[in-house]
Image (cartoon, rainbow, N blue to C red; front, side, top):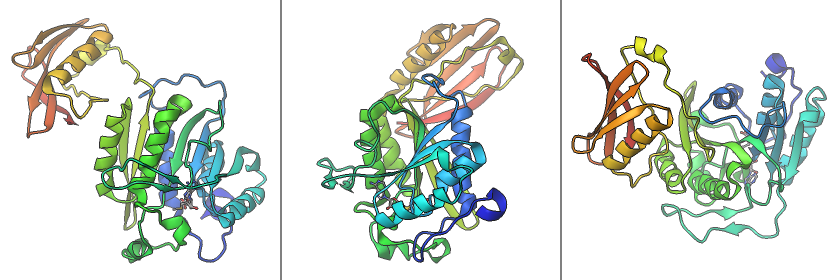
Length: 341
Ligand SMILES: C[S@@+](CC[C@H](N)C(=O)[O-])C[C@H]1O[C@@H](n2cnc3c(N)ncnc32)[C@H](O)[C@@H]1O
């Protein structure tokens, strides 16, 4: 597929992880969607070329090769093993049409890091991931990562449908993906807006919930998730940013619709229904609307141009709030997005 569809000359030594191209392309295209959305503003771009950072590029170097050939993106691809670094370099050199776009960077380190704090019972031990690898003053549009998902090689063999080979160095890390991605989150707290989007692939759906809680705890401004389904394999994507989300101005053309939906971003775990009400109020005020809050009944009447509507915060099941918008004087009540607390 790499040769036929992408004109890429490619090889890996026996035993190294053989990437499934469609699933890797899905991840690249999800990042493309994030970058072209206006979820966060597009500031501090002093370059035309999109710059990505691929954590653990592997011998296969799949993400830089795909991102550069499909979309003309430039990449720094990092890794820790000699075999990965050597073959990633070979794969770049053998594709002179895109080789200028890709730098392969060795993760230099004296000692493995050991996290003092444990994240839901898992803590990372291993080489640096972002901090100490990203150079001072470097800025990237995104980072991406297909982390070692597993804690042991026994776990790797459990699902024969998803087996694509791979050595322990590629597949396993103490604490598995939870520990690896938690360390990425910790690093991102230091590096903040050096990246517009931090992203990672997630191998187990059960990892998502803890990771999302951790992201809320450290105060990211946006979290996005997605599911990648290809053949018999499902994977998930998680993305976060520290850039404040774009404030959208409510325009009068919305008034022609009779359905409104609301997205709540950045709701902290500890937020009560009252806090959510306040966030909704400040969102609409920030968009130039006037608001009348009824804190006893948990609703806000919003007026903007010709648009009048009511937003109500409901407690659904304990720990979960639902925000509904209803147009006045019409009867339409539509579910919005649930904010998990
Ligand atoms: C699952 S493989 C992914 C390879 C390739 N990106 C892919 O999608 O097929 C994980 C890679 O991460 C590398 N790795 C592990 N710890 C790392 C670290 N701290 N920094 C950079 N790479 C690391 C491993 O050597 C391995 O090549």
